[in-house]
Image 1 (spheres, chains in turn yellow, green):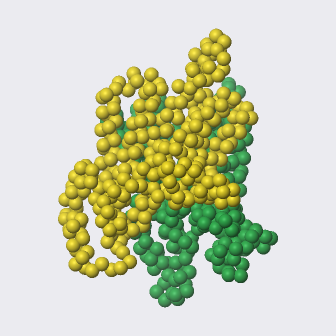
Image 2: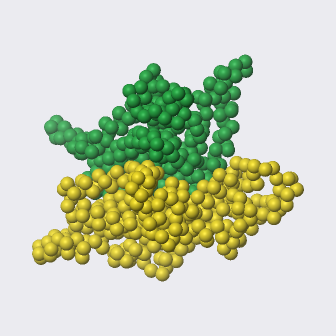
Image 3: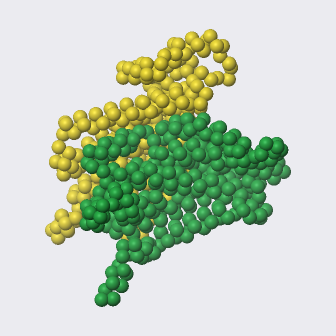
Length: 309
Length: 325
C-alpha cells in the first residue's frame, strides 16, 4: 500500500518534471518574447530586465535556475503585473477557482450519481431513456452555450441570481457558474455510474440477494453502490483537476476572478512566469486528482487492494 | 458443405455488428443527421444560393430571421445562414484532420507498444501515462501559440508560390484570402491532434496484445515475414473495429475543444469563422439578437449529439458485452 503510494508519487514527480520542461521550452519559443509591450522599452532597460531575470545566461543554466526556483516553491515574478510574485497571483485567485470547482463537483455528484443509479435500476424504461437523453444533451451542449442562456434567463430576465462576479461569502453569486460547470460533469457521472451499476447488478451475488428476498432498494444501496461507483471514482479525481483548469471558459462568461483569466491574459501577453506557474499548478492538481481517485478505488473495491500490493 | 460455409459467412463479426447497429435507432438517426449536416456544409458553399459569408452590409445589419435571411444577420449585416454552413465546413474539416492526426499517431504508437517486447512496451506506456497527467488545455494552448509562429510564414510562402511575379495586388489578395484560413488552422489541429492520441493508443495496444498471441500470427512468423508486415498487414486489420469506434468518439471531443479555443479567442482568427467563433459572437449579442446564438449552437449540438449516438452505437455493436457508459 505504502509502496504503491510511493510509486504513484514518484510518477507524479516525473509528470511535473516533464510538464516543467515542456512549458519551459514552449515558453522560450513563444512568438514575441516576454518584454513586448505597447510602449517600446528602451534598450538598456530591457538589457537590465533580461539580466535580472537571467535571460542572458545560456539555456541550460536558465533551465536549472528556474527548476531550482520552482523546487524551492518560488515561481518567479510576473512581467505583466509589474513584478508581482507569481506565488501572490496564485494565492489570490486560486481559492476562487478552487471554491468554484469544489461546489460544482459537489453539485455534479449530487445530481449525476443518483441519476445514474436510478437509470440503471430502471434499465431500458422511459425513465432510463429520459435520464440518458438529458445526460447526452449535457455532454453536447457546451458550457459556453449553457452559460449565456442561464445568465440570460435566471440572471437577467427573472433576476434570481447575480449574473457576474464572485463573492466567497455570498452563495447567490456562486449559483450560475456552479450550475453551468456542474451540469456537464453531472452528465459524465450519470453515464459512468449507470455503466458501473449495470455491471454490478449483473453479478451472481445480486441474484442470490434477490432470491433471499432482499428488497430492491437495499440491494441497490447496500450491495451494489460500492462496486458500481468504481468507474465514477476513477473519473472524479482527474475530473476535479479538469474542472479547475477547465473553468477558463466559465470564468470568462461570468467574470469570475479566478486563475483561468490570469492564464488567458498571460498567454496573450507572453507573461512566461505566470504561464509556467499556472501550468505547473494545474499539473500538480492532475497528479493529486489521480492519486485521490486511486485511493477512492482502493477504498471502494477490496479486490484492487490485493492487486496493487 | 456449402451451406455450412454460408452459415459461417452469415455470422461474421462485421455483419453481426452492422446488424446490431441497424437495430439501434439512436445510432441510425445520428448517422443520417450527421450525413445531412456534413452534406449541406460541403455542398452548399459551392452553390449560388449561399451569400458570401463575409459580405458586410450596414443596411441589413441585425435583421431577425426572415424569408430573405433565413437565420437573420449579425451586427455587420453578414448573412448567418451562409456563415453557419461556411463555419460548419471549417469546424468539420478541423475535426476530421485533427482526428486523423490523432488516430495515425495513436494507432502506430499503440500497435508498436503492443507488439514489442515487454521492456519496450513498459517504457512506451510509461510515456503515455506521463502525457496523460499533463493539463491538456494548458499544453494545447501553449503548443498552438508556438506553432502559430512557425506557420505564420507559411501563408506568405504559399501565396508567393501560387502567384506569378507579375500578378496584380488584387490577384494576390484573392489568393491570400483563400490560403490564410487553411494555414491558420494548421497549428490548431496539429496541437490538438498531437495530444489526443493517448486513449486510442491504449486501446490499440490492448487489442494488438490479445491478437498477437493467436495462431495465424505464429504462422505468419514461421513464413519468415518481417515484423512490419506482420504488425501492419496481419494484426492491425483485426483491430479495425475498436479503432473505428474510438475515432467516432474522438471527433466530438475535438470539435468541442476547437470551439472552446475559439471561444477563448485562441483559435481561429476573424474573419474566418467556425461554429465555435459563431457561438462566441452569438453569446456576446444574445440579449438583443438571440438567433445569433441559437442557430450555430443548434447545428453544433446536433452534430455532437449525432456523433456521440453513432459512436455509442458502434461500440455496442462491435462489443455487445460492453454496457453504455
